[in-house]
Length: 135
Image 1 (spheres, rainbow, N blue to C red):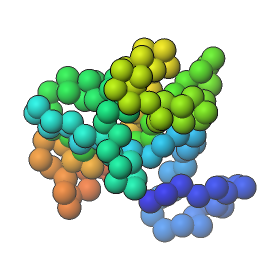
Image 2 (image 1 turned 180 degrees about the vertical axis):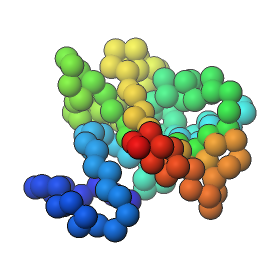
Image 3 (image 1 turned 45 degrees about the vertical axis):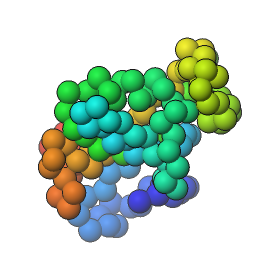
Image 4 (image 1 turned 30 degrees about the horizontal axis):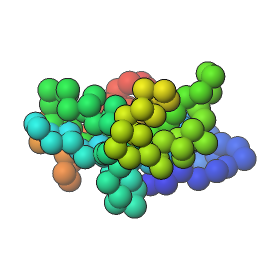
């Protein structure tokens, strides 16, 4: 689900179930697929962003568990998230991407675990974690 801008939060009990509101960072939506020996970072439009963000790919390759993560790619600059720096990073490939990663590293803020160690793909992994963490 894509985030929507709202001027204010809904009143108490306005929605069925429970309401979780979180700040939306200014970045690129991405899905990270990490499996033994294979990593792919994909934009919400399906573009392969793995070569653009080699530091994210390297971190994912070091994971010891097969995961599919949904999150937001961000680049901090002087203590704030900087969308312009993220856009600059998105234009780099090859050695330029490696150099840019060293100068302005990107981070993936994960907000959903879509699959973990084969559990997922039709099973909702995150809601149990969210309700337990927020209870």
